[in-house]
Image 1 (cartoon, rainbow, N blue to C red):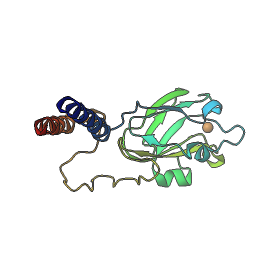
Image 2 (cartoon, rainbow, N blue to C red):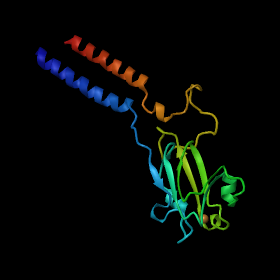
Image 3 (cartoon, rainbow, N blue to C red):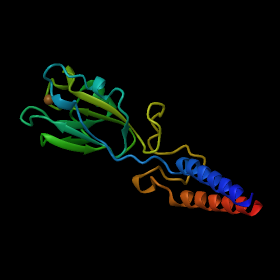
Image 4 (tube, rainbow, N blue to C red):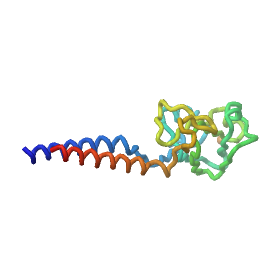
Length: 188
Ligand SMILES: [Cu+2]
């Protein structure tokens, strides 16, 4: 009886380990690069709808927006919400003019982009994306407050690429599993 019981115990430990590790280790996804507008790029031709383009996509901090356009006719300005809504280009937060701009989303929350060429924003060359911090759910996530977090322990920093896998938590999980398996084997 001893060997079969021990085999059962080891199988149980393995199963518990698999489930526990799946829960402990967050799913890690590589940063995504999006071409704004996909094949049509950043333009006013053919009535692009960048709101529709962004719909259903989950943007994470660390992802990249590639704006591809003819730099003779367009540019990319990151602007505040009010300027996005009003299509004002006078106080851009950032300006991109290369015609092939890779813009890394560096903070969670909304990011607003318009073309600064007169008239273009008004006919739809504008993009509003909502970025969520890594590790947060997509569809159900709401934008965090601009400068503070609502975690129970206020000192915990926002998730970042460096903390995507949390070694102390994984180590604690492994220690727990070792303790469980040692206990199971002792019982038999
Ligand atoms: Cu334009």
